[in-house]
Amino acid sequence: MTAPASLPDGPRPEEWDLRFDDAYEIGAEAVRGFARAVCDPHVPFGARGVLPADTPVPVALLAAPMFDAAAALVSRAIPNCNLSRIVHAAQQFTVLWPLRIGQRVGFGARLTSHVVKAGVDILVIDVTAYADGSPHLAAVITLAHSGSAAPEVDLDAVADLIMLTGTGPSDSDAYTATRG
Image (cartoon, rainbow, N blue to C red; front, top):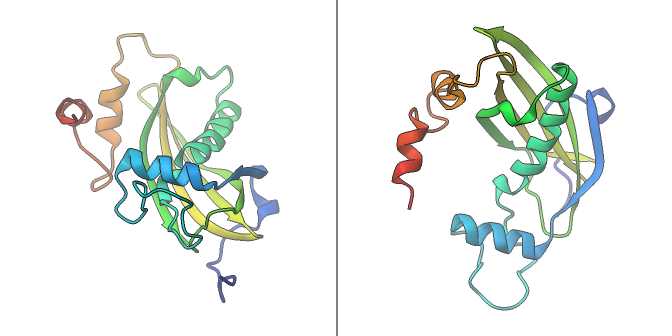
C-alpha cells in the first residue's frame, strides 16, 4: 500500500500541543482481540492462524490511546484535575487513510475548545494518529469534567445533556441497562 496521493489540510506534527511519537504498534493479536470483543464482521477473528496482512484494522482500536492523549491535555488545561471526574461525552472518527497490521502509530493532540458551563468544564480535543509519517485517523473527542461540583452531581446526566445527536444514546443509563 502506498501513501495517499493527497492528504487533507491539517496540523503538521510539530504544531500539536502534545506529541506521542511511536506510541502504539498495531499487532495482529490486538486486532483479533478487539474485533472479537466488538464482533467486527470485517475481521476473521474466529479463524485460526495468522491474520492476513490486508485485514482491515477496526477504527475504534485506537480509541483508548487517543483518549489517553486527550486526558494528558485535560490534566494540563485543568490544574489539579481529578481524572476520575471526566465523562467521555462524544467522539467522532475520520479515517484519512487505512491503517494496517504491523504499523507503529504516533499521536498528535490539540485542545481546540475549553468552556465552563454550570461548573462543568467541557473540552474538545483533536487527536490524529500518524503512521509512516502520514495522518491516518483523526478524532474529535468531547469530554466533560466536574472537579468543583458536589459529589451528588450526576456526570452521566451531564454527558446525556451535551451528547450530540447521532453520536450515541441520549439516555446512557437506559442504553447500558439494555446491553447484555
